[in-house]
Image (tube, rainbow, N blue to C red):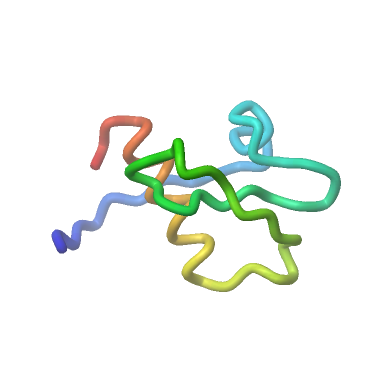
Amino acid sequence: MLLTDTKIKVTHQMMGENNMTRGNQYGIPVDPKNPSKGLKWLSIMEMEDEDFDLIEEYFLIKSGAS
């Protein structure tokens, strides 16, 4: 694993534009490197640090920064 200082600020708008919101839930990529594996849906209160990391990794990969 390569650790870097690269970070990205993920906003609710970004999540919505990428069809990663529904009702009061957010979609967390099952595998950020392979989006075809789908999303798991959780409310923000159910999410753990790992879930936020998966979302961040997905957007980093999508932006080409990773």
